[in-house]
Amino acid sequence: MSSLLDSVSLPYLILSACLSVILLRRFLAHDKGGSKSIAQGCLPEPRVRQWDPIFGFDIVISQGRALREHRYLEWLRDLHASMPHTKTFSANYGGYRWIFSIEPEILKAVYATNFQSFGVEPIRQHPPGFQPFAHKGVSTSDGDDWSFSRTLIKPFFERSVYVSTDRIKPFADKFMTLLPDDGETFDIQPLLQRWFLDITSEFIFGKSQDSMTHADRAEVTWAMADVLRGGRQRAQTHRILWAFNWSWWFEAVEKVHAFLNPYIRSTLKELEERQQRIKDGLPVDEERTDLLWSMATMLPDEEELRSQVCLIFVPNNDTTSMFIGHCLYFLARNSNAWKRLRDEVDAVGDAPITFEMLRNMKYLNGILNESMEPNPLSPSRPLALTTHCTPAHRLIPNNVTQVRAALSDVVLPLGGGPNGKAPLDIRKGDIVSVTKTVMYRDPDQWGPDANEYRPERWDGIRGGWHFLPYGGGPRRCPAQMMVQNESGYMLFRLAQKYSTIVARDPEPFRARMRIGPSSMHGVKIAFYK
Image (cartoon, helix red, strand yellow):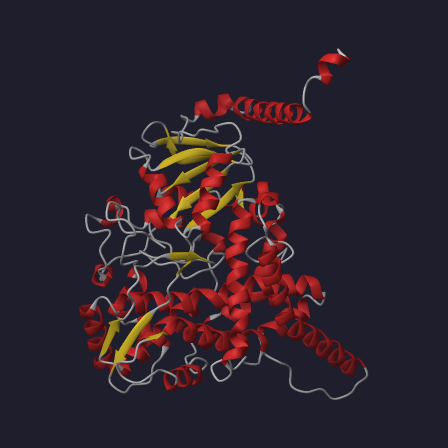
């Protein structure tokens, strides 16, 4: 016996053991509760053909390569196109049963109907993908931890805060002075990032970074972009992190932490001194009203506070500026849309810009909802589409996929059977991913012109589970109205000032994934008054 074992290589034994564990796990998962799922009419879902159906590393490697080569959107589109007879199917993804779907009813079940059965911790917190950048926070936690994180930030996204345009105006005024002369080609994306860094830093830290005046102070935005890009890649390849060089990501994390640490430490020190003065009966200054101060009063631990702040400040700083950049990119290629926006803005006259005014501007809001990617990378493919809380809109959602892990066994209303119309049995540990970037272009939901840029389509459309820009159910993004207000305000001011916007980018759109997709080549345009 010993001689036989000696002849077997160690890698073979390890491979055999892993294979046995995976097969046993699958057998137990299939056997568990089988009669219950049959009683509810559940049928197995269609499956993607894979050359590695056991470990599922083929799809992990394929997706990782697509991310690195900046063709992730095409990869998602092609994946769904390979299963034309169903809107729901599965694949073995690194040993997990991974459900892909573009069914609104499945999104509804995950977000609301069966909210308690799905979570994000198994995906974003337990694998080491996001660490050491952050651990617990509003976008990585479930249960009581998530409720606490939500409590930390919720007061700052109440109506009294998000309706204010006075908070936005001075930053928009400064932004307008930095735009070049008529007809000059420039990339507006970096300037939008500096604008939003300034407005966000004042909101969160109580003091603006003033990067529109001092451009060098915006260097941290590039580190934040790398953190988000790497975080996505690490989360999706967490089982084989050892196979990649992540030194660039750890360097970006260090830069972001170095930026945030002084704010956090000075706030905690100031809070401690204030509390001591109150205890000693001494007078104190008026209390700060920024978000970091409020969070520090409830969470005085430096490391835990930094984790919470990281998961608010870093993704938030990327999304709105990137989204406005997309809107301008597409408006520059649709002169009629810019003219209609100008007509709507001109009709307002010199009235003060308020939240209610912006909310009631139908065409402006249609533009915010409709923004799209204009150029496919291959003429044989339909147009490509582009967290956590992001301003996800129809044809270029920043939140490309909505991914949740099953925390318990549950039955979804659709997804089973050859055409995906039967109930589907989901087991604890399965992953459900709704591909919004494909769902938002589904002709069954949006008609035969689903791939066309048509802001006017939104006139009279009511919301539904087929379009959830900010999520739904208990985890709905608390910053929804703030993002709409900031984005609408900036587009209003630009349309108010300029009669024409022209595209000056010779390159086709190519998406580079961060918190969402951004144009690799920037947003090169020219304005004319």
